[in-house]
Image (cartoon, rainbow, N blue to C red; front, side, top):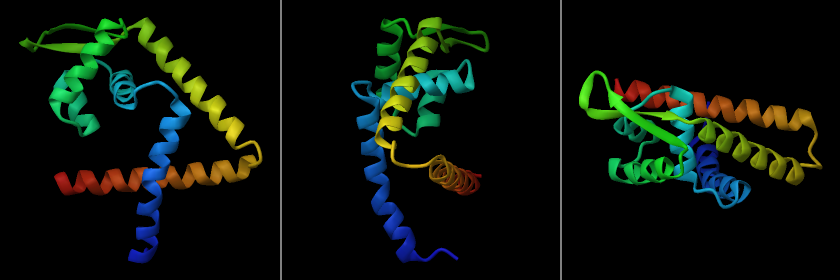
Length: 144
């Protein structure tokens, strides 16, 4: 059973992981990249749905979506179910940007983890996936 002491240690590490992710990503804006990735992962979404997926304020996400549209990475088309809304989709340029961003992060991470063996990386990946899944399941149960 997880103790509060162990969980407190984990909570202390999480901000460092987020900072490490930002360093690995380089110049890319994490919220902007996250918004693009959410639309890519889930398909056609309204801006409000992107905000819900990211857990961010609608005005913040609207700014990022506007930036992505200006850069030609997202396109908006009228929502057939609600003429007042638009649905966002990732363009070919957006998919290429996500792929390039992922390649940059993978290369940077591979350089920094050069002295790790694959078994350690697989073990860490499994544990982080378990943490993400468990945290998400608990959050969804709490919202149900």
